[in-house]
Amino acid sequence: MPETVRTLIQICLFKAKPQDLGASVNLLIVAIAATLGLFIARNARLLEDDVLLISLVQAALPGLGLKLLLTLFSKSERWLQSATALYGCSALLLLIIIPFILMSDGGALSQGNFSLTQIPIIASSLWYFMVIIFIFRETLEISRVLAFFIALVLELSFATILLKLFGDQLL
Image (cartoon, rainbow, N blue to C red; front, side):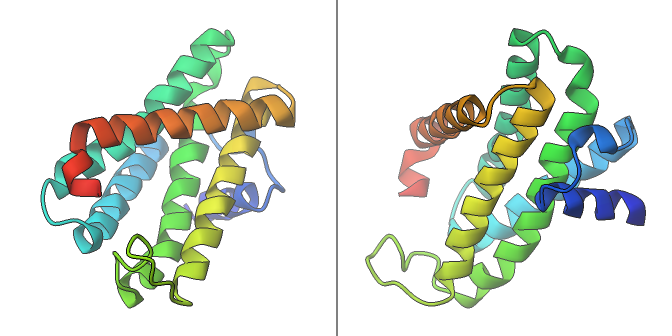
């Protein structure tokens, strides 16, 4: 497992590729479970109701989006390693964000009150977006620009789905 964590860190630093991870269903399950657990921990601090359901949807959407992309690009055989990279990197970056969320007032940004603890949250979120672009570029063998636009459309779609399903909880 330490080698896997090292590889995930290297992917987050753009020094390794998703295909450098071992293809293991058990590893994917651990990565998904870690991501889900961290979503629950984060959402428990930020939300009042439906924490588990919102966390499940947040954890499911990236995997479904990745599966759709792999099918559209005829690269379905890359699911295991790319999904492991996506969920593993998500878990690592959530580990960075959660302490800052715990230190800050969860609603401060939406209320117009900005604090220094929100800078790492914003930076980590942007870093995660860049990691998604990197994973898409490597997995789908596409240009950075196309990977950027695909990631942007997916993230906006995920946000729209979450707002349609749980708008009263998220706003």
